[in-house]
Length: 303
Image (cartoon, rainbow, N blue to C red; front, top):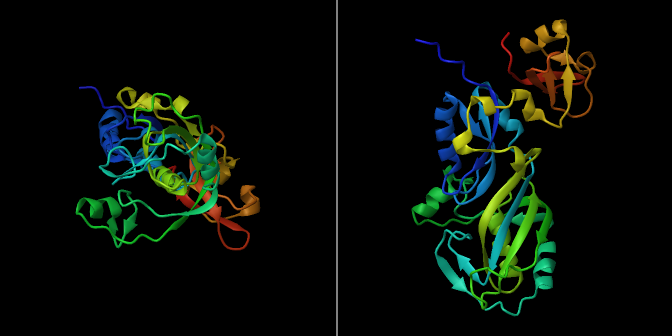
């Protein structure tokens, strides 16, 4: 009987299909990749599609360095209809005649929702409050007060109204949107806030995530095409961020998790830094420590 090939270590960029939770994708990926050690770097709603970054094998430990990356989304805002979930999956809770709203009004309202803003997390989100996720409370019929949280919306672009919006003319129309924002921003809440700013209501539909930091849709693999050969090396977790190459002597100290002088490692600035061997393989991630020293946030390579 042939030996089973070793389980991969690294990142997988998946194009999440609609109707799957992020947890569903992780569970399916475990079978496709031959390892139980799979996690993701940021939840996508079940109805949403697009970029979901997975950590595989030892690289699951790197997900902490990816969770705060900015995101980019496209979607559609339906004016004149509010729902329980703030998106098309929910039950209608209200209708508004917003037929007098003009495209320039929508763009102006969107501009008012850019920059540093406060946002109330939706009850259907995965955010925890009092030790329980909000969507668990919502399913139990419980609604709790949610304090607003600060988020940053880099850009909120509104396109021309869709001629085939399919929502009727009295609702106020359907507008395509393109949003670049900080981690933790809820696009469905942006849609609801946009409707409220226009004197009515709105909900989100057809959400698609185009990018998580430097990881973009063009490189994402459909879930049914995922396999070990599509796993990127662990060092890709630090794509576009500082790396330092060490020789064999220094690599031995890094592998043992030694605290080092920043000068000896050849780093400056706030960090963190990906420490790689001459072949480009990731050995560890180092972070600022006391005074002029740096320490490993994690060591990936065996000692």
